[in-house]
Length: 199
Image (cartoon, rainbow, N blue to C red):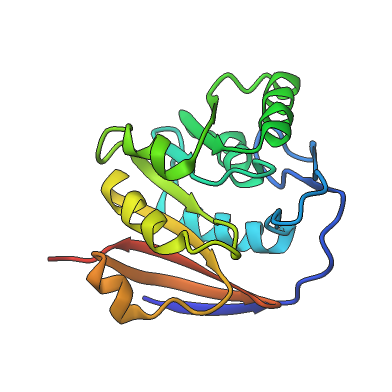
């Protein structure tokens, strides 16, 4: 059943916390980057409540963050018990910060890959991930190709989380083989939980 929520969004902080799981209350630094929009605590809390409803046992989950940024979504998934999480990021400084955070947490289940998200993902096997995060920079038209890539990489029964400056049209999503499970809004950010559309 599709549901929608609305949250107030405050100014981005210079650090955010991991909300739940074994790395709970550990801080993630937020590097000063123009296109960096870390997903706020309240939005992540809503998202991971949705995911917990879909996947009560997170242990088998394999996660992918195509545009990792701070790594907040990927590390949150790892914190909650996912077996493997892959973070893809092209910015050198952000990659260094992701690796440093992984080492500080001892998060051996997290893999950090530097490179263009679409190009790197093109070399990954189909249906390899259960949860995929898609939050590309708004200034570049990456959302459509990123969703197409995520759809190919999505395992049966998996879910895609996508952020966008507007609501994603359901007709466009259906054309990409996706359907909306849940939606929310935080300030000007619209976030969506998507699944494969039944044939």
